[in-house]
Image 1 (cartoon, helix red, strand yellow):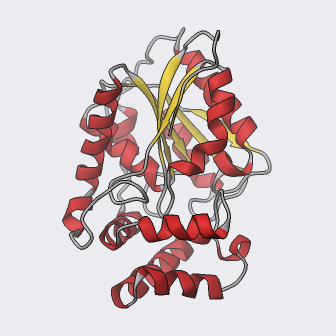
Image 2: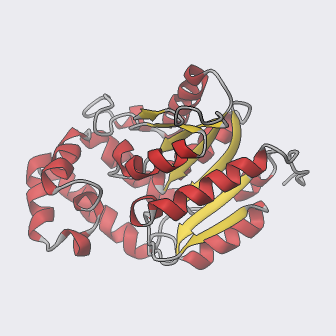
Length: 271
C-alpha cells in the first residue's frame, strides 16, 4: 500500500511500515490519509511470506530474521530516499534487525507495541499453540479452529484486524506456514538488543497503547528510557494503536517525524 501526500501539501518525508506477526500491510490502512495530510508518503508492506508477499511454503530458513532484515534494506533502497522506519510488534523486531545491519537508509525508527526481547509468557503459550496446530493441520483447518474459539475481539490474533472476517480469512490463508513457524519461534526467543540499538545515531520513538499483554507497558516504558527515545502512549488503544486509535497514532508519528527535521542526531554512548 503506497499513498502520497495530499495535492498541494509540502512533501515532508517517506515512511516505510512493517506489520506484525499474522498481520499485513492493511493494518496501517487508517494511517495513510492523516499522514498524507501531514505531508508524508506512506509505504506499508507485507513481509516475506505474509499475505500478498510471496515466499517458500516449507523452508523456515528463508524466514530467518537476518533474511527479513535484508528485505527491509532492499525496500528502503528501492524507495530511493532516506526513510522513517516503523515496525509494529514482530515488525518492530525486524525493523530493529535491519537498522542494526545498516542504519544509513533510515531517518528514524519507531517501535510500535514492540518490546526489547521475547514476548510475554502468556503470549508465548498462544504462539506455541498456533505452531503446534500448524505442524499437523492445514491453514484452512487452523482458521476454522480459531473461529470456533470465540468472538474475534476475545480470540484476537489473525481473527482480529481491519476488515470483515472473510477479508481476514483471505489474509490468513495467504500466509506461508513456514513463515508463521519461523517468526513465531523468533517472537519467543528474541534476545535483548536495546544496548546495541541505543549506540546508533538515530532518533527513536516508542509508541504503544495504554494496555498491552504482549509486552507490558512498563517494559516498553523502560525500553524507551534505555533508548533515550521519544515516548507516546495512546489512550484508548491496546496492542494495535494503528487500528484502535489511528488519528492520535498518526498525529504522534507525524509530530515525531517533524521533530527529526530540525534536530541533529543525538550523541549516544557506546554500549
